[in-house]
Length: 408
Image (cartoon, rainbow, N blue to C red; front, side, top):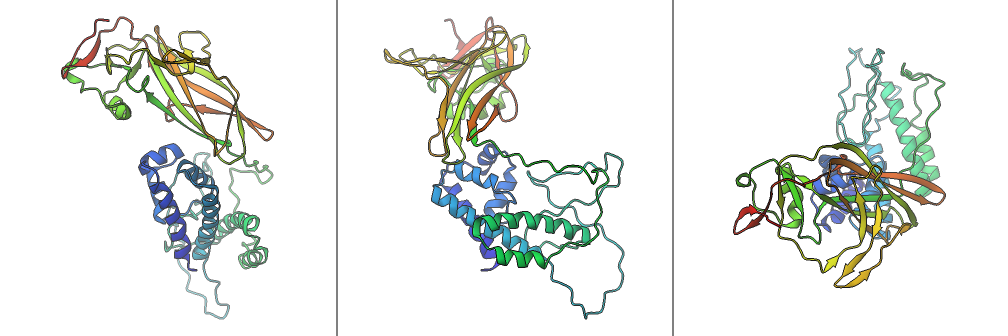
C-alpha cells in the first residue's frame, strides 16, 4: 500500500468519527486543547500526529467503540510509518561523481503546531541551532537536510519504531530499517544542555478527560448576567444553548451565581476513582458595576437538581454536596468518591454563589487509578470562572419585546 493510501485511510476514519458529532472543528479542538487548523489538517490527511494521545482523546470525545479505537490505533501506526518512509532520502550512489560544492543554506523553518517545541538557545546567548524537522509535515515538502537534521530525524524514527514493535511485532523488518539509517558519528551538541544532564522521564497524562460548561442556566431557563450597558443597548435574551456566544458579545459577567456542568470520562475502560473536588479563589474585588439582566421571570420551585454548592463569600470555600427535589420527592446528595471510565462517564453540577464580591475561581479534581494519583484543574477554557454579586444593582427582565424593571 502506498504512503498516500495509509495516510488517507487514517484521515478517513478520523473524518467519519467527527461526522458522528454535531460539533464543529473549532468546538472539538477547544475540548482537545489544540488549534482548529491542526485538527482539520489531521482529518484531511495533510498532517499525521506524532503522538497518539490527541487521537485517543479525539476518539473518546466522538464516542468511538473499543473496536474502532483499536482500528484507529492500527491505522495511525501505519500512517506514521508511511510518513517516515516518504521523508527518508535515498542512499547516495558510491560510484556517482560528488556534486560541486555549494554555499550552505539555512533550512526552511518547519510549520508550528500545538505539539511543536521551541528552543531557548538564542535567549541564553548561545548560537541558535536549527529546529528539528516536523515529522508530521505534508508529504512532498522539500527537505534540504544537513547531517545534523538527519541525525535528529533518525532519533524520532527510533521512537516511532518502538511503538510499532510493541503493537505489530515486526521486529525483523524494523531492525533492518533502523540499520540502514545509522546517524552520523559526529553531531553538534546544543550548548545550552550539558552533556551529562539527565534525560527527564516522560510524564503520563491523567487517565481522565473533562469538559466544563460555565454557561449552564438553572433548569435551563433562569440566570442573571451583569452587563455594563443600558437596556436599550442589550439585545433580547438568547436560548439557553446560545448563552455562551451571547454573553461573550455583551462582555457579560455571571450575576449572583455560576452553574458549571462538568463531564468527566476515563480514557480507557480501566476505572478511575474521583476522590475529591476543591475550590480555589484566585481573586476578589468589589462587585462589578452595571445592570443585572434576568434571562426570564424564573422557573418555579418544583424541581431542584442535586449539585455541589459553593459559597464564594467564605474565606475558604468548600464544594458541598447538596440534595435535590423532584416535585416534592427528595433527591439525596451523592458524595465522593465517584468511579468513571471510558464507558461510564459522570456529570457533576457545581453551583457557586456570591453576594459580596467579584470572585475569580477554579476547581481541582483529585483522581486515583492503578496506584497512581493526581489532580486536574478545571477552569473556563484556561481562565478562572468569574461570578459577581448583584445586590443593589438595577435589575431588568425581558417582557413584551423590551427590557423592563424587575420589582421582586
